[in-house]
Amino acid sequence: MALGSQSRENRMQLKHNIGPCIDTIQDKLFILSQDIWRCPELAHGEKQSHDRLVRFLSDDNLWVVESHYKLPTAVRATWGPFGGKDGDRALNVGFLCEYDALPGIGHACGHNLIAEVGVAAALGLTGALGLVREPTDCLTPLRVKVTVLGTPAEEDGGGKVDLILAGAFEDMDVVFMAHPAQQDVAFLPCVSITDVTVKYHGKASHAAAYPWEGVNALDAAVLAYNSLSVLRQQLKPDWRLHGIIKHGGVKPNIIPAYTELEYYLRTPLVTDLSDLKAKAEACFRSAAMATGCQVEITYPNHTYSNILPNATLAQLYKENGRALGIEFVEVQNNFSGSTDFGNVSFVVPGIHPFFYIGTDALNHTEEYTAAAGAEKAQFYTLRTAKALAMTAVDVLCCPELFHKMREEFSEAKLKQEQGPKDKDTTGSTHS
Image (cartoon, rainbow, N blue to C red; front, side):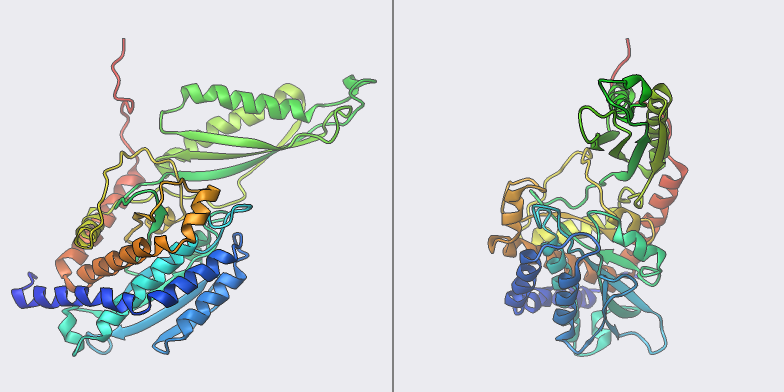
């Protein structure tokens, strides 16, 4: 169904109203962000951030707020349904928040701003909808429901994956979130990741008096580390593995009886991850065999998937962002970061753009921690929130765009599940 000129005019008015709705509460949003920033909490321990979000969202009696939603530090707040016909299923638009910090350096990935941008976008959208004289004026063919979902433990553990498994995304039709970075980018695929813990068990002995009685677990760890370093030459250019020796022994004159390594394995597509895991496990097991140690290999956390692309959402976001003055850059798809939003993108259409916050500092540094708490970041954060909410309006008010978004989601998911065709990914010639 094509929109007439009056329909376009009303949709543009709805989008125009989002900005003032966010601007009127910008001081409150900054305080929310500051409160989270000043009290950095690690994954699954975000108690004060959880409570702060609950209090903030509970100030508006139009929202139904659920604390400890399916996880101890997750939050859900819902608004609506609005418009449409009574009894019709509501089209549920989700805005995701993160708020866990990094050990030692606090909010060096700007998750306080992710929480703020998610809340701001949701309140901007609902505020604009609330200004509509009649629900039918917003041109939404279905009833509208808006959800803010506070998702803990992105940095370690995968809170969104736990929420997926608990059914938190089952009734959502589209989800939005945005991540702080050094520039504005509508889409970066991110990469899939799994972390592996490897424990070697040997036998202690005096390292000088009778070393032949010992079984050296440190030798196994070093062999595995070196084997993986050599393996890199044979990996595809966009595959990554990196790790540390977490425990290497207790004293030089004791043959180490126990060592432990932790590694991250990353591939652009989650379908390739099993191949990299098999290669890495061969290195871990061969080191145990060579030294006579026993080995334990475990994968303690959820695997993070790559983010599925959705060209419709990305293009809409770029158009809305440009209207607000955002200057997007084109980045080659060589970004090696990972996020549990990737898993969400396989169950519901969504977008995860990156946004500039006024600094060239790199994420996961002390300089970025300072930038994430600076007032300067507020302009860029709220501008991003407005662009997200405006994109939600496009999807809600234009059935053609909604169906196109859904079709692209289904096609991208099917393509990924079928796996990539074999090809030379280096772009080089052979001699």
